[in-house]
Length: 451
Image (cartoon, rainbow, N blue to C red):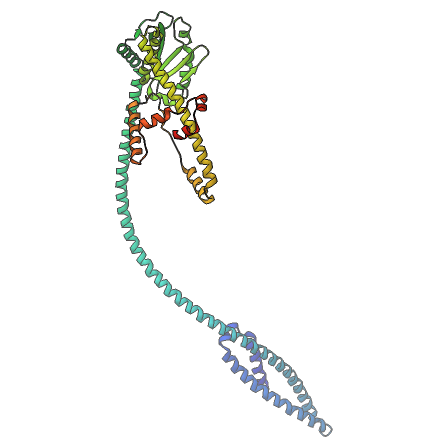
């Protein structure tokens, strides 16, 4: 009896003291204890049944044997003990059931963990393989990186040499530009420093060439740089140049000088037109070359334009002696002027006629051309740009060049079958009436034959 209780106690103590990992991995030993305890439990149950029978028999024979009273009491006590044991067994069975369910859960979790371990092992193996590949690639990259470093070092060395050469060439170029700029500035300074002497020498040379009087000492107040005497008038040419390479104040300087030459104009017999002679390369920075003041005018001219200006002033002297011309010379002058006036009027008349024809052509094109073609024509019209030749300052229009250009255009027209015979055109143009009174006398048929 006591042995049976010891087995059950050992089972209870074993169940209470078992750990988590022992429940998972040492469940076999617990099962053996459970089997032993189960056997003892069956024996106790059988003993309990026997005791119950004995108790029943004892109750029947209680009246016959008083000596059995102690035995009955003892058996009753044992029965109480057995009942308590049964209660404990029930508790153990319930706990066993709970433990069994827990064990199943642990087994299931253990299976899941085992599967997870298997998956982790596979991932670990795959990771190790990938790591091995990465290590191999890293080794290759290290080798390649060494080669690249060597090539890079060589390239850097080559680049450094090229950079040094480029820097040297650049420094040399900058030095050459610097020297050229210094030389240019020196030449400019020399030119501007010698500008007054150059102007004086140039004017004296022109005066000597065309027999014009150059006045060394003026008979009035002030000392102009250069003075000419034409038609009993003193014409002043003052030389002006920048003080340095900074042109920022040159415009204001010229304006101030234009106002300061008023002292010359106040003197008797001094022409009311004063000329300020500046270096040719300074004209581009001047936005005003003519100063029309209250009592006189100031013209800013370059050294290169002195000769035609002085010659034009000399022509004035020739005009004043027109009464000394012979009748034949007077007639020639009048003939040239009359021819010029007649040609000017004819040109105005012909240009007006062709302007009218061009207007009619524009209107007819807008009215007669299809819409899509007219739109395309408008696009080409917007894209076209007609720039006539630009007239340059201080550059005379060459009659020889104009004649050569005219001959070239005439040859091109004749090659295209256009009639350019001057005799025919001249006859037709001469028949064109110049004034409205002449036009009224012309018939419609004659006008139709003009063009």
